[in-house]
Length: 185
Image 1 (cartoon, rainbow, N blue to C red):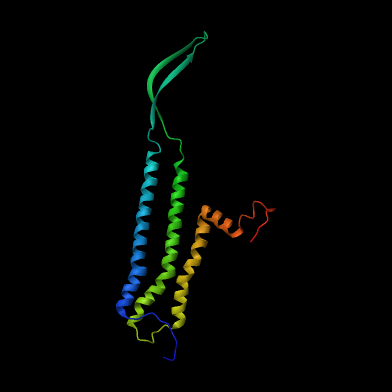
Image 2 (cartoon, rainbow, N blue to C red; image 1 turned 180 degrees about the vertical axis):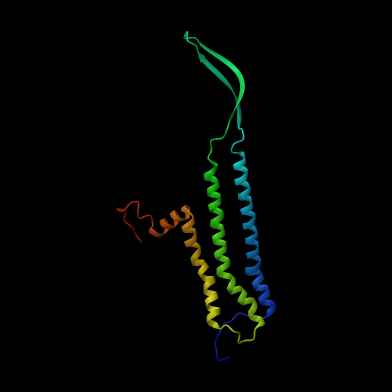
């Protein structure tokens, strides 16, 4: 062989098995799990919203009356008063929605970046050696998939304050807090 080229086997069985096990089945599982997580988050938000105004405890009220003769009386009216939770469930619901949105964006980016490569990998064995697309298209699709690895830290940094803090700490080695500290390498 004059042309030293390393290529992936284009045998139909290999490509079907390879693309199914490395992309299609994991992507379907990922989408299914995301859908379940989204449904669970929605149920939790609805449940919290419905329980927001339900009584938590019952107390008995006492009336303290002061008449004109400066006499103070106290009576037990035995009327139940409902006390509601003071926890702000709205912030928690916002956090869950934001987490679901972040998960959707990261999952969507994964699918968009890798789907062209794996569609091409599945179609390739059916084509003759000289398909309509050339090495440039194949290379672009492969690099689009690789770009997903670059995109993930960017997306996590944009959408996650915790990840953003850790990423800044990693990048700047904590230089912003103590400028007089000497760094030894």
